[in-house]
Length: 523
Image (cartoon, rainbow, N blue to C red):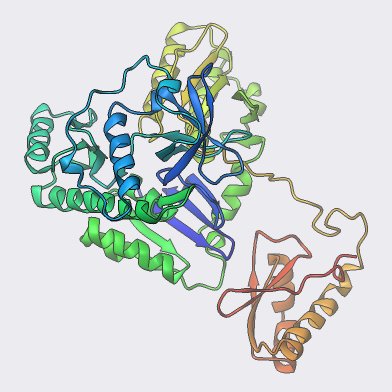
């Protein structure tokens, strides 16, 4: 399988697309001003205790207080709490974690009111980002994730991923880590550590432990609430979880993110550093790799897949519902049962892709086309389990019911990814009236004149709809040529699939957008 990562960095947001054999399978989009990311560590303040829920609401600087359940305190909370109090009371030096003696584990059936009182300080980590009307979900079991290992302060155990099938290899890794890990640190060995040498694992272990030591010094000057540790950038975080030798290319259109990703890949897999490429093409990077088209076709309510069959995907507060429809396949002559199993098997492939693509979590109910034969239902269930085997999110799949319903639970960590794929009218932008489109290029020329003569920008890129770009470039003496001769040779016309028919954007050569918008082109 040929896997590629395409990263589009824009002034206000960063978008990441994972392609497998040129097909979009994962997509993440994040504004630069997002306050939270899974893995961030905060020094928070207990705002309210909820004994009925056995939980507390914690102020970590978000408009909605974060949620900390008693079960998320972790077995070693007593040691963590003692460390935090010792650090905050001294304010001069962070005590060494190695000096903290073993304390009893947190009782499994205890009460949150016995642990905290209102106003207490607590060290927490974001476990789930804000979803819908809910604030972030927190945990007090702090961890630092690397490529091969996860380090948990104040623990002692060494655990090895069950996905490593060889018992001999699991034993080797466990003994190896036990021999090199520092005191009072628990370690989880990830699947990617299989077959790795001691030098590689020791280097990452020391890096993760140093990350703890370096960031805990921020507690000495922290004010409530305060960010203590910020997880790596989304691009690096995603790469850390999914990177494998099957990756052929990583394309990035921003030099800073390129350097960040290149440095990370050079550390974990020096032989693969050459696959990280800085994209310098004129077309928007998502247009160049056919991502824009796949986003628009893959995120709608109706998703077509094979021979006219399609899915209808509905989202509610409690669950996601997927309905499988045969479309014009119902006219097939191969028989109802054969048609049903054929469509359902193809639908399973698209559903497995959609779960990853939209990052759908919680309860998902799939209404497959009814099949009379139990063998076919079992065959479909087994195939769905196989397709979901590579899904990184924790999930559980129940057998297909007699009514043809398949129930899936899937880990929900981030908000459901969704897009409004229906566009505003590309000519009136929802206003119901427009100037004659024949005058559009005249008005666009006025904007170009303003950029060159008023803003004094001689080199810039004008992004327009591909149809408009084709129109202004056609012919030997095209409008583009005339504009260059009249105003500046530094004019570049860029077709952009994400824009409406009469929409436009001006960018300087540093990729900063020039504010040229008013109502004159669409009034």
